[in-house]
Image 1 (cartoon, rainbow, N blue to C red):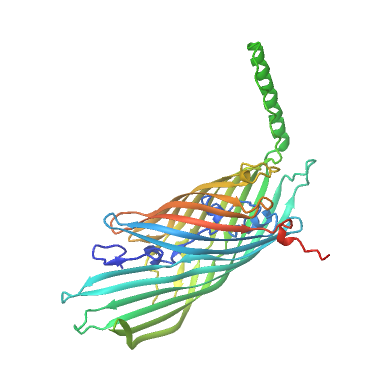
Image 2: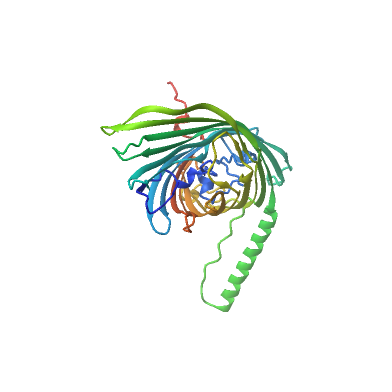
Length: 473
């Protein structure tokens, strides 16, 4: 199948022509706040964020949280000669997390996309008679996952005199159920009156099966509050000395005294994250239907069924995945990076007559991101509690198409806006990801995409008006 070719009459990408291969386009991390930070998710703690990539992160929740998001995709396709544009919108599922026992326990449930298939390619092929046949290839569907997980703080040091905990170790795990259908349709429309028979061939691969993942978080102080306070005192002494020296050097002149530096309320901490997803054998079932048809009055009329196969069963082996990450944070900053790997070359599909039409390779993903909130911990200013996010990502794709292994690079940025002054953890997340996938080499296709993300995070706040019971007087 030609992705882009000079003889192609039309190509409208519902999602991506590359989704015709393998399991489709892998979604990666669908949580909007993490996508806007380059996709970091292994060593991230968010008081209102849920990261199923590493279930140990659930213990970072301060209160119950609900997250969901959507993405609007705008893509420019080119092979170096022709250029086409497409657009698509996608719901990114939802997640719900609930902590209890003073943060020692937490749980989360959710429904998220794993991969998407969506393409529509039509082209003309030359017949021996000199006429042309219209070939159309369409694909839809993808793989999804439902998950439920628990996290537990298995060890933490005793709180110091300021009430801060130094070291902490958390473990978590998810039970995951993967499900979905990959549908492919081939259609051939021949010239009228030349004795050819039009045909439609439909193939559906139904996938079902459980798996699981687990993760670890270990955090500790990188710079203690005592050290930070000592540094603050030294800076204040130095500023006062410099001020006094200036006054002595400029007699008779006035100069405002230096302001007092704000004491830190939270230390700098580091976090190490590890995660792994178990290998699994998904149950696979293939349905196949081939029919011939004629066109009458612009309507397809089925004439005959030439092949019908229902429930051709087999298995799909999905190899394990691993990830590691590191982050540092304080009351305003978080800087994180992680790496994830899965050896897709070990994927095996045992269903007669069905193949993925592409060579699969090990995939590596490198992410780096940061977030900044101008407000300090006790600062209740609404505008200062807006969180700014940015990140970069590079992924060596799991697909090799025409001997070219795809790669993807992207930059991202966005903001998280509090919904109200009283409940700053509830927020609207908005941002943009700009990236490139593939190349314009011989027989290749490059995608340059602009993805616009919109997400919402909701947390209950008992001070909000709708939580206040009415009084009957």
